[in-house]
Length: 340
Image (cartoon, rainbow, N blue to C red; front, top):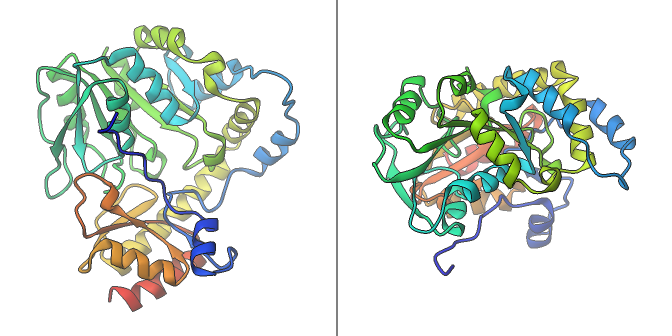
C-alpha cells in the first residue's frame, strides 16, 4: 500500500483558527462544497425523535429515495455517504490485476478505492474544456465519471456517457453528487443499460454532509449483488435515516437553497472570470501558484481549496464553494486584493 495516497479534505474552522489566531466565527469556509443554508428545519426536528438504542430501519428511506430519483425501489441502494456506496461496488467488481479508467482532474477517492482493491487506475487527461476522452480501453473493469465534475464543475454530455457505456462491458459509475445544481440528470439512462450506475448523495443540495448518507440508482442485477456485499444496515444510522426522510419530505426547502446558490454562482463566475460551472463551486485559474494564493486567502480568514491535491489539476487552480451572499462578499473582497 505504499502507492496509496491519503484523501485530502478541505480545511476546517478549528485548524485555521488555531494556525492563524482567527476567531472561528469570523472564518468563512468555502473549501468543502457544503451547503451554507443547511438542511430543512424538519431535519432537526426529526433528529430529536431518534432512538439511538435501536438499529436503523431503512425501508421507508429507500422508498422515498426511489420516488425522488424516479426509479423502482429494486434499483435503489444506500450507503454511508456516496463513499460507502462506491466502497461496496469496488469490493464487488475489482480485484488484483484489474484496471479502472479515471479522467483527470477529478475526485481523488476513485483512485484510493481502486488501489485498495489491488487494481490499477488508468488516468486519462480531460481536454481544455474538461471533456472526457472518447472510448474505453478493452481491459478496463470500471470507469469513474464525475458529473458535474469535481473540481472543474462541468457536466458530462449524454452522448459522452452513452458512448462510454456502449463501448465496453465495464461498469461505468456516474457520480452525480452535485446534480441538483446542474441543468439535468442522466439517472434515467440506468434503465437502458446493464453496466451503468448513477451515484448520488444527500450531503450537498440537501445539506446533510455531517450525516453521511448516499445512494445509487443501478440495474437490478447489480443491486442484488450490492445488497449481499453491503455492511449490516448498509452502514447507515438511525440519525441518517431520520434526517434523510425529513429532508426528502421538504423538497421546497432544498430547491430554494439550490436556486440561491445558483444565483450566487452566476455572480462569482461573472466577477472572477471562473470556468463555467454546473456545481455549487467555481474553478479558477491563478497566475501565482495555487498554494500561494490559497495561503493569502487563509490569512484573511477565507478557506478555499488549493487544487494541487487533484491529480492532473496542476499548480495554478483553486476551487471556491458558493456561499451565502455575505460569505461571497468576503471572498470577492479578498479576491480583489489577491488576484486582481
